[in-house]
Amino acid sequence: MAILKKNAFSRRVPDLVTEELVAVLSRRSSFEFKQLFEIVHENLRARNAASGGEEMLRLRAYEKLQNLVARGAVKKTGKKYKGLPAALALAIAPQNGHLPAAAAAKTPAKPAAAAAK
Image 1 (cartoon, rainbow, N blue to C red):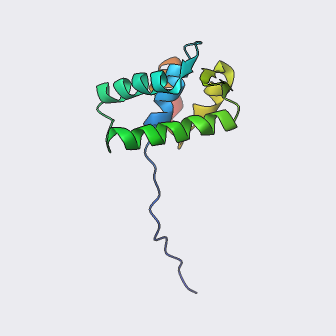
Image 2 (cartoon, rainbow, N blue to C red):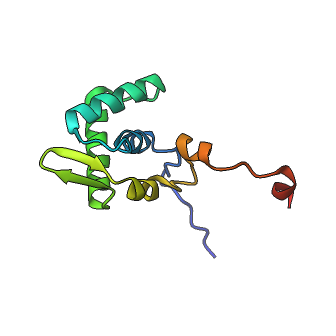
């Protein structure tokens, strides 16, 4: 019997661009893409996670934003984007088994006895 070998690379790191987009759009105000990207870019630079050049990051952020719009987590009115908090929480929740920093802070820690079972 032949053993199938997986040759493709699987990306399992957390999606920091989407996390930052959700964090900014959860503020309950509307943004044009340029304003939104400037905030996201500054946040990613502060986390030392803005790599690959600003233009590439801009393209990735725009693609992630359009995916959030398509999933119904963000409402687009003209050129303005506004996050829908309930839908944004569902959009980012269990992404690749990674909890975003904001969600991890809200989640209560498991007791050591319960984790040992």
